[in-house]
Amino acid sequence: MNALALEPGERTQIRAWHAIDGRRSLLRAAAFVAIWLGCAAVALAVPLLALRLACYCIAGACAQGLVILMHDGVHHVLFRNRVANRWVAFVCGLPAFLSVTSYRVGHFPHHRHERGARDPDEIENFSTEPRVHAALLVALLLAGDVFGLWRVGPWNVVRARGAERRAVALEYALIVAAFAAAVILLPGVWLLHGWLLPSLFARQLTNVRTLAEHALTGHSRLTATRSVPSNRFVSFFMCNLNYHHVHHLYPGVPWYHLPALHAMLAGRLERSGAQIYRSYTAFLLDFARFVARAWGPGGRDQALTLRPAA
Image (cartoon, rainbow, N blue to C red; front, side, top):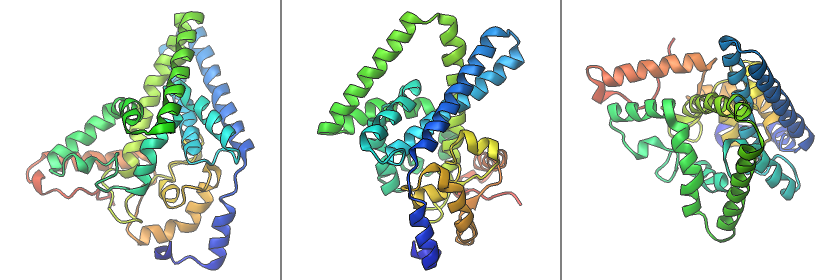
């Protein structure tokens, strides 16, 4: 990354941060499962709406966290062993009905062609008219993960070739079998409070996260991504993927090293014009201002970049 003017010592440190410690990912996955099960038990035992909503939200954050660990598996940085990497990633993605191989088929082009014509996640490829673009982004915020499930699943099966297609077919057969067994063996009320309702929260959290990662950013290597450091609570459940700039610059760095990498590079990224937000609330407020401008008078002249509030 010559544009960041790295010192030799910094390059050495970044190489060190590529080290993989599978135990840390296993412990985080176990923590997510334990918190999820605890929230499900409370939601089942205490019929208090406010408490149940809080449980669904936290359990949903755990479900999203497992998917983010799966995402590390997509980049082959969960474990050094490729077999363990694939199948632990598969288990992490299973509750979200995601095939790790299918996800990889669409995700690598996103990294290679970030915010370009060949990026499968790029909304500007659908429309650059500001009002239409704003409408598409609002749709993604409200229901983007529904489209994402289709794109990551059936659409990527079409795009996969050879061994990848066979791997996707195997993984989806196992996912369907696991869900069928759950429906047959578990009481419906358990699935409702323990999986279905938390999954609705997980999908909305995913919509906010994915919108914040790339929507209305620049198009250069250093500005096409947005980071939202937020706070430790958010970073815990997001496995630090909110430090999205450094993930895209160094996708081989595991999730537990991203905060330190961000601390090293944040000043230079900001001087390069990158957007770094203090919180997701601040991002959503600026996004709302963009939509209001796009749909207001003179909206057709609105630039497709976010202007952070002072």
